[in-house]
Amino acid sequence: MILTLITLALAAFGFVWGKIRADVVALIALMVLTVGGIITTQEALSGFSNSIVIMMVGLFVVGGAIFNTGLAKTIGARLLKLGGGSETRLFLVVMCGTAIIGGFVSNTGTVALMLPIVVSMAAVSGGSPRRLLMPLAFASSLGGMLTLIGTPPNLVIAEVWENFSEKPLTFFTFLPAGAVCLLAGTMLLIPLSKWFLSKRPSDGNGVQTHRSLPDIVEEYGLNADLYLVSVGSGSPICGHTLASLHLRGDYGIEILEVRSGDKSGRLIKNIVQEAPTASTKIEAGDNLYLRGKKEDIGRFVVDFRLTLDATNSDRSQLQFYDIGIAEIVPLPNSPVLKDTIAAIDFSNRFGVNVIGIRRKTNYITHNLGECTVRPGDVLLVQGTWKDIDSLSHETSNWVVLGQPLSEAAKVTLDYKAPIAAIIMLLMVAGLVFEVVPAVITVILAALAMVLTGCFRNVSDAYKTINWESIVLIAAMMPMSFALEKTGVSEMVSSTLVEALGSLGPHWLLAGVYFTTSIMTLFISNTATAVLLAPIALESAVAFGVNPLPFLFAVTFGASLCFASPFSTPPNALVMPAGQYTFMDYVKVGLPLQLLLGILMIFVLPLFFPF
Image 1 (cartoon, rainbow, N blue to C red):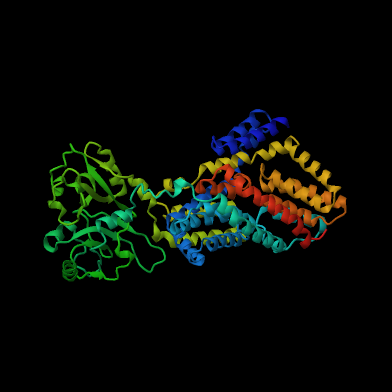
Image 2 (image 1 turned 60 degrees about the horizontal axis):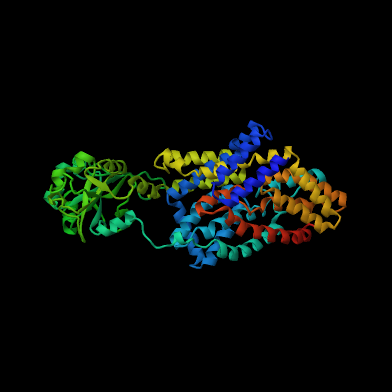
């Protein structure tokens, strides 16, 4: 028992200290308890096979796909309209929306669903995600108190009550007390989040460390004289290579991209982009992105019976799904200096095309083949992301500005957003109706996101998983075995209940609530509810009062635990995205947890009299 208490105390100190990563602190504590013989190897590793932990992995992938396809940005834009430009109103939209979803979907699933949406909302509105993400996690737990299925502890006390009274709790028995708790929690979080979750200085220093792809496009004016031309099946251009068309010589125009598979009006789209080369063959259904004078483009369209998109829609703008752009700076001793772009032959030698030159304050985007590369020039190249990245290895010739593969990862596959939305809705339906176990539903959704192309590759899907949060939760879960096996849990709960029971039912209720609340800081809320629900029931019966408010004190105390990042999976999920420390949870979560606890001690007997 002494080793367990010392280990937990040192772990708590390590979390507060913050000099060692939280997941490493949790692993050290886990190893101490294992080597010390408190828990077995199987018990120590059980957290890594726990269904909640596995579900968190899948939810990270689903959330990543929602973000990667731009679906988060779309939903976030809708919610921003509801926010009406008011920071407080936006805060209320996030809290209420999350709580409602949390009443029907697991709080872990709710946070994973909303996290990328809230991050996008913060980015669009110019606010800090820190102000919204921790309240998001807390709102999911508050929403879980609205219905029977909102959180596992609700089901635990429902089973204990039914076995005792032979009367089941209904789906909305929790709603009155849960609604009061949600309202109070929201009102408390408005000032707490303002005081303690404001922007860090490093978040808003105004220093722009790099230019985005749209910034580069605008700087070079690539969209200014860009035209989208569609190739129909009756066009004589079909089957011809670009070399045979002599676009530059006969029409004075250049082709920047050949895109296929973009079928407007279809729910599911598949876009394939190709950087043009001399051997590129034009097929029916292709979209050509051309740059040149409007009259030259018109003449080309008429000659080859093509269709010009005159709407200037988003489809008429350059996108960077398969191909991208990057700037390269030739070194002073580079052999490419004093050669023309045509002579260097970037296309055949490196698989990229030069589509612009920045020469001091001037930008050259036409007749590039005849331009000679001068010292100080910056060349804008276009090609597949892989080919652009390979230019980085030509260190004797030039320097590639930025990190091409990192830039590629930032490009949203927005044409996949409808697929991601369908998968997300099916996942939510599966979680609500429990057709299969929740963990299976989430894993199926994650696999569907990968297989339908919502990520460029499997590696991108793996990169969305925050392993620090996964290891933190998995390492902390087995702590419950140590507390139970050494008798710490039973000793603490029994002592507090016996000491406070003689003072009256409200004091006994307070003892049950805060014993549960404190224990949930160290073990899972479900394990705490399983352990304390029978004790609360027996204590109420012995005292001669109705056990129902005491059972509700157990589920509220177990679920509304906000003072640490590892007390619930939602708290851990938002920790890396919000860049929170352990003390952030203490500053915001601890007063919220205490004030809600005091409130519920008086509210629960009103709805469930002694």
